[in-house]
Length: 198
Image (cartoon, rainbow, N blue to C red; front, side, top):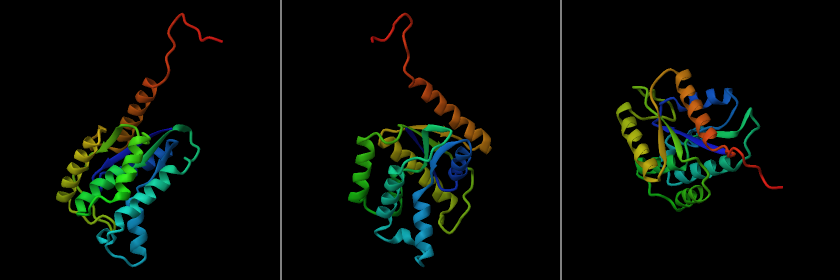
């Protein structure tokens, strides 16, 4: 199973791309932070990101979803994730929370076990950022957040694959083509005139 991350600033279109990839038959995992915020707000917590436990709750959900067996799809060797613990590291930095032991341990785990492919799809902003209950950030702040994500992923040694602002079919085609090329590169090659021993 090759696991690829979609990342970028809030409102860049990651979720729409992820659902489009799911429609193509890829296994997908939706963003944990959005789910945590929605759950906490449903419990009456208006701004859950201000709580010290916020980051660790996201990390726990990310780990649980990553370890869950992928649903069988038409492309069972590939799985896409809307964000990862590296994004949670950037989020923690952005909102001023210290990097918790749980987050550090999870980043150590995904690095040691090579959980995610080192090629990360960086979905660029669309030129605006529509606010929602879970997304209360101005477009100007979203650009700062975008740069922070870029710096954080590079600092952990990931290679960013640029997905610029463009119509959804074009963005999905870019990702599909890139993944296909990576998969082809990793296929074992047999040298002409050789045979395996029996």
